[in-house]
Length: 415
Image (cartoon, rainbow, N blue to C red; front, side, top):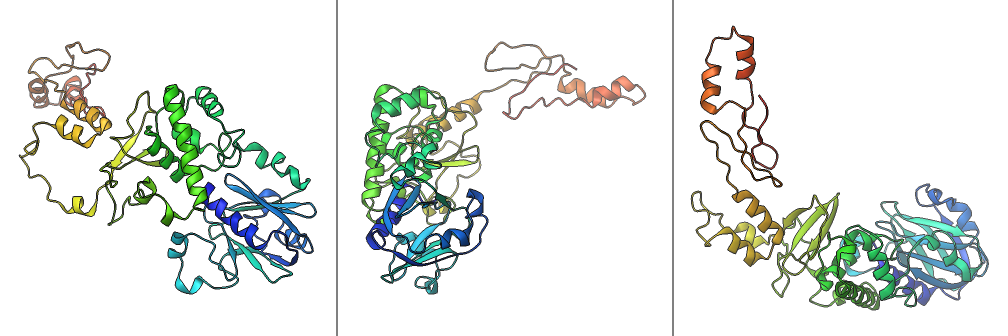
């Protein structure tokens, strides 16, 4: 999804080619997803553009607009796959064109276009959206007040444009007044405009913060570090107009896209091992050794380490040689820098004795052993061999003595 840097890129080209020019012709497809869901009719919207001058173009987070000489004005959102194309100009970033077929690069009008305009000077622009999650709406208000109307008024400050609003104090107040994972807070457009998945991961990587730690569980020093990281990442990405080929070599962006790929990068150049966390269907890329938790994290986190092609092809440990390559599992995990894995390994080390007469049950809150009333293994099989005439014995033979929960621990059940 285009984020703050990609939106800045689109607006850059609008200002370069269209601001100050009069629209001679406009045309739009009647797409109910792109226009209708925000109360706009495509053809009527296009008809209302003809003869108007484009006064300015602006951006707030993931939204951008064209202020016209007379209301209403156009406010747009790219959704997942939207983009602005200009005839004879390559407006998109490198990876955008890599996903297109060669014969589509210079095709006009471009494939999946939703509306297009032509100025009196002959410049042509088209809004495209293959997946139709983008939105094009008209806002009837004075041009200088566009941000005071929906949808922009409901969105938080832009960390690049709104320097007077997005301050360290603003961010600290938002973090302390909420209790959600810090990644979720960064993605909340009502708090900060323009940060999406890759920008949030980049910000947290440079701030050295765990993505699933609760936002109100950080120190003031860590909050300051996060603020500076947001400013650094967003300003740098916008200055480069979202061109990832110009991003610094040490950015996570350059190595985070390998999940499930044959050519995946499992480490950054400085040696940080990468992994993915999945919570509620949302995925985060992070470096466990660098982004250690310093407070409580949300439950239900699923971690999946990245493996390079070399790691995937390396020979697996033979049966019966577990632990031969290192003194113990703890050292191996410490070298990897993964606290989450270390905790799981510790949990797996717990042993529960199953004695002939008594079964012991351990729980996290009560480590005392308690005798179980369930039959022992010998009693169970002895009872199972008895004649089936006795209904009580038959039921007893059917008792499940595994007592295993999902964690793999044993729990006692009353017979």
